Length: 414
Image (cartoon, rainbow, N blue to C red; front, side):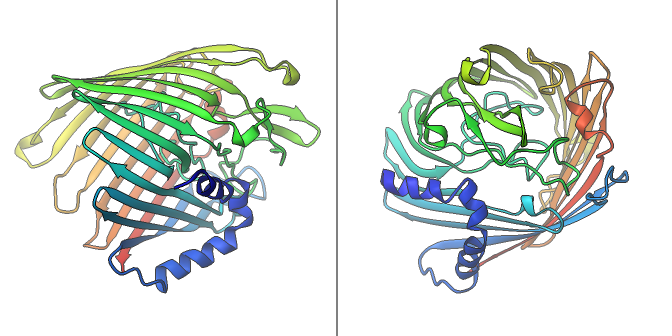
């Protein structure tokens, strides 16, 4: 895939995603119901989502319940040492038009050999080992319109080269386009507590076309998995600058060094993520340089066949530290405790519950997530979040936004 095609893919993202929403729906409908693709694997996931908020909304724009539809379509075709893959994501919300979006999660060509691999196009890459936070996961922009756990990611244009080495790999990334973060509209309960300007500011004169670079080295040594990674480019985290049109999103430049460790000791897994980040100064926008230090570390213990059953029960305990202020992020001085129950049944049923407790001010956020298949073509997911904020911190904006979320998915292929 050439750079020209990558640019076309990039142009189909970002703001163009919004303006091309109807065109995207048309293409998806054609792909799903009309297009014959003999010899190629195609399947789809249709989802129905219901969010029910526990407390009454704080203004007349917002509701207590929100319904939404989603369509996720997958395509793959392999031939010899090459693979073509695509994933398109469509969301349509009942009340919040800002949440309606189409994203190219994946659209890439992959060539693999014994010692190396090339991946060119739009893809998603995950870096991280811990449960409660993913500090080093920096390649893809987070899709905050989909989940509160920050695990949903937008597609990222990239040239990704992997060189296999003894028990590990070295990866190089060239990232030619940046995806801006998307925000809920004022009609939604998760909307930001201020007006967001349509304008976006960048530190780099290249704006979204700034070419970011990344490197990751990972290896397995006996029972230890380790990795180090570096990134230089546009900060995935947004800042807001005050302006006449509200708060203007601002994306600066940053340098980041990260590491992960995961050590297996029988039923115990000790894991950690470590982050050093420098955001560069920008005198024009009165942004000062900042050095950020953060880590999350802990363990997971798995009890196999608990109570003489087929169930596995995992216990999670992690500590989070972050040098940023309490108003900027969660996890400055927090402890996460949770449990994961795997039923090991034919429906792949699983439940995880957890609490993130702020040691400094006693704020808490609690979550429950469960999933199971209902037959061959359907799956149900349930999630519940409860927020208890004390004082002036990042969690305060979610106070009174306790929510229960139900997702039902139907899979089919043609």
